[in-house]
Image 1 (tube, rainbow, N blue to C red):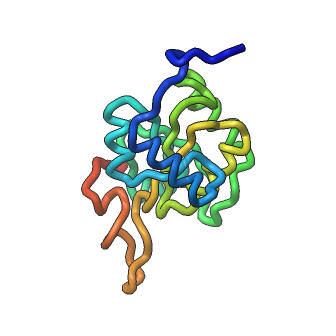
Image 2 (image 1 turned 90 degrees about the vertical axis):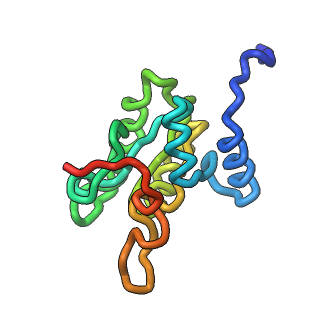
Length: 160
C-alpha cells in the first residue's frame, strides 16, 4: 500500500522541532515541549494533555483543567502502575489511539519522560513529554516552582 501525500498529516511546527530534537538526542519517544507550547497545542486542538502524576498530587497540588489523567505511579510510595499503557490507550482511543498526539505531564518532567518511553515502546507514535512538568525542578532552597514548570509560567491550573 502506498501513502499518498494528502494522507500524511503534518504536525505543527513546534512538534516537528520537538521530534527533530528527540532524534538528535536519541530520545526513545517523539520529543519534548515546554509547558507554554504544550498549552498552545492543547488550546489549538492539536494535542491531548495527559497528567501522569498520582491522584494525590493532582488533588493536593493542583492540575490543568480538562486534562486527562493516567497515573504512571500511585500512592505516596509512587508504586509503578502496571496498567499504565492499557489505561493510556483507553483514555485516548476515541482521539486516534496510538496515533494521537499525546503530551504527558508530571511534576518535573522526569516521570513523564519514563511514561513517554513506555508508551512509545507500546506503539504510541506521537507521545511527547512536557518538559519542566507541573511544578518544575527543585531550586537551591529545596523549593519547586521558582524558576520553571507549568505553574511558574502562569498557565491555567485549578486545585480541588
